[in-house]
Amino acid sequence: SFDERLLERLGRSGERLSHRLHVEITAYGQAAVKPLTRMFGEGGWGEVHAVRLIRELGAQRAIGPLLQLLLDSEPGVIVYDEADLGELVIDPALQTIEATEDEEHRAALAALLARTPGRRSDVREAIEGILTFAPELGCGLLAEYGDPAALPALSAVLDELEIDRQTTT
Image 1 (tube, rainbow, N blue to C red):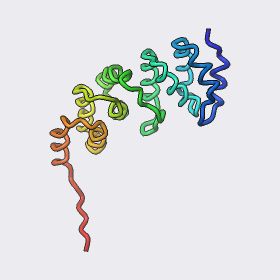
Image 2 (cartoon, rainbow, N blue to C red):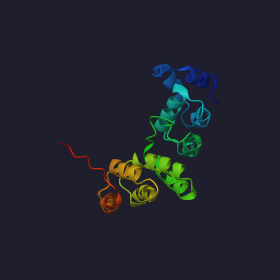
Image 3 (spheres, rainbow, N blue to C red):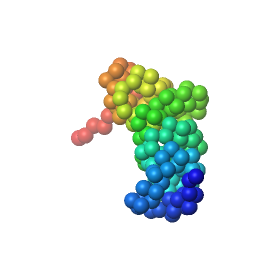
Image 4 (tube, rainbow, N blue to C red):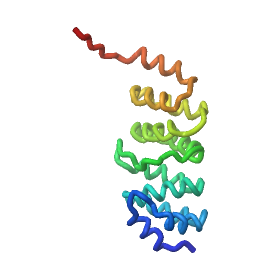
């Protein structure tokens, strides 16, 4: 069974995770995932390292708690710097964005989706969905996602936005 003392050490870790602690935790493989999710919401470097370790372990079952951590956080707060969980996060994030009506949560999920790999129409459409309530943010996220298929939606929104033009004399 997982050695709980490893979580205590992880919680006390600084910006750099020691190689020894990394090896000790990853040696548990998938058995480390559930204990690592208990670090969510703790803040600090321990939480950041827990997210990174879960990503490294490719733990699909940790995605739900990660998304909940994102939704439970204050709007505008970056929960973890390394939110890039790759393709693992796409389907759960799409299901969550579809199920929530809260605009701030939808925007946070769209920001997460904008950092995912590949170019999927369902991801692009989910990001486009925030254009109605946060056009500037949506345009930025679509640009970050980089799907050329988003150009018509971007063009339509940009045509509607007022652009402040400053004249120089």
